[in-house]
Length: 257
Image (cartoon, rainbow, N blue to C red; front, side, top):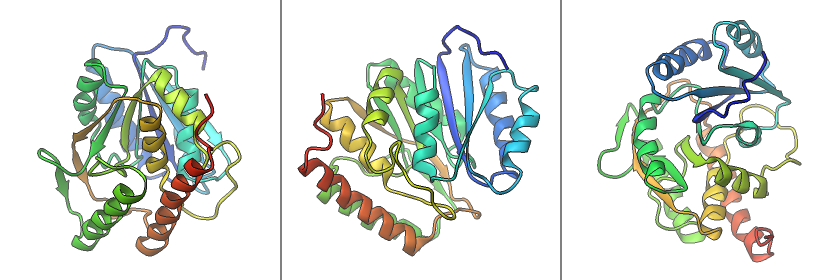
């Protein structure tokens, strides 16, 4: 598909690993929403080395949705996949969201409001006044609160929820931050299975260190029964990543101009 040279208002990046079944519905919902908006947008699906028919179903939809793009990666995890899509995005604003639309695409309007007001970054939050959680098991909520306390003590204070997969950036800010990540940057190694990481903590740490204005925005969120999160394994990985962000900062890894 030949790309338009005109810059879209919004880029939506959707990382996908083995999402053959859910992606068609997700893309239908996203495209239906965008068709009602007064701005141009592009949707970028970045395949994370899927082992099912994810690539095939997206390729079949490319002729249907002219503003849809597909990028194929080898399997290096969600963080690397999001980074690939964000750095390839051309929109004035760049939003990344999960392939299951746990946060409905309509919630974008809440984030856009603050970007339009001058914030550099707007992040969806499952906490705070106005946030709505649907179907989340109590133990997952408790685990999330414990992790958030660790994040605030070790790396990033001031945010009630760093992990919601619904974050938006001004284009230049996204380019700056995602080129500076160290945990899962361009040298990220291949992984096995789904890999949920603490890359959101690093993004926000770099953002604050660079002096960007970040707004946490309460959103609606639905717990997915087919979630790829492994409570114990991914909690330990997130803890390790959070400690690594602090260590990277102490050794000056984020100090380059």
